[in-house]
Amino acid sequence: MALLHVWRPSVAELSAGSYANVRQQDLTAAGSSGITYKAGGGRFGENTVLDNNTSSSSYLRFEINGQERDWDQTTGIYILTSVYWEGGPSTGDIGTLLTISDVNGSVTASQAAFRLNVNLGGTLAFQNEAGAYYGVDSGVTQQQATLKHMAWNELEIYVTPSATAGTLTVKLNGVTIVNGTNIADTGVASTWESVSLWGGAIGAGTSAERGFRWGDTLIMDGSGSTFNDFIGDFRFEVDAAPTADGTTTAWTALGAGAAYVEIDDTEGTPDDDTSYIESTTAAQDSFVTYAGATLTNVNTITGVVVGVYARDDAGSAPLQIAHRVDSSSSFGTGTTYTLLATYEVIWDEFALNPNTAGAWTKTTIDAAEWGVQSIT
Image 1 (cartoon, rainbow, N blue to C red):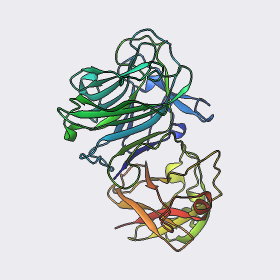
Image 2: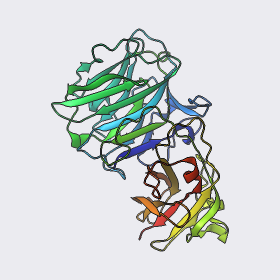
Image 3: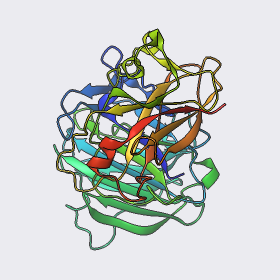
Image 4: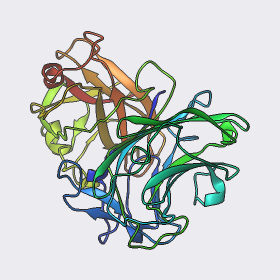
């Protein structure tokens, strides 16, 4: 494993204007009254998520242990995200922006193995599990260690677990402000359970000072051969719905029509059992194709992430996300997932083109087919 979470806030579901119904695997929204959409507020004009709750119960929690994608406890945690600070600016302590915690349920400050805090007008500071504070490295200027106000900030964090010698590396807007610093107690590895994004709600600070928008987020561990290190500034570029059936369509389409028509729902607003494809047979594949990818100002394609919205009647069937390159050649499958009885989003990443073992290009993405495979 390497890639634990892929989160795209622009396609989350809303309930009565709040970020209350997030049907994505291992992701929970808490204190939803303070977590809302910011229409057109993303880095590139897409919708995004704004957390400006003044209570300490408002956060987005990603489970990293004991779930479908378990963190490799021999490595640390990479958290790559972007954040826009539209509150303040403040001259005091705003509060906590991000935690790694010991629980998967409701999170409190005392359960944080690591905390990223925002204080002194946007300056970042860090706390270990024992509550000790750590600053940035010597030689780093205050400006380099401060969130830009009313602007997007690129944030990259790597933390390793240890009861006595946990280490921390932090990059802010491409500048390393903490480089492998020993921050002592970051908790026992086996107790790390979740990563949470906050709105500055733990600690001091007024509601006017809070208000953080969150952008595309990756959470990774250090295992595997890909998605296991800092990658710099990134974004999820393409939202594509299927436009035609692929080479193989063994799954049964509702109404016995084209398979792609039954699964081309608008992202973020699936129609559940109104349209679908299904299989009751092991080792069946079903593939679709997509219209040409639209890539704007992209220097490097780090990988392709494919998501499906699926369930199993009994809540126990395994499923793989699969792909073909050049139609029938270079077939590949991803992680096996055990489906629930209720719908959820599952996804898998394909860092390399299996036909060349090299990086994807727009041409090879356009030539690929993507689909699912029933296992047993």
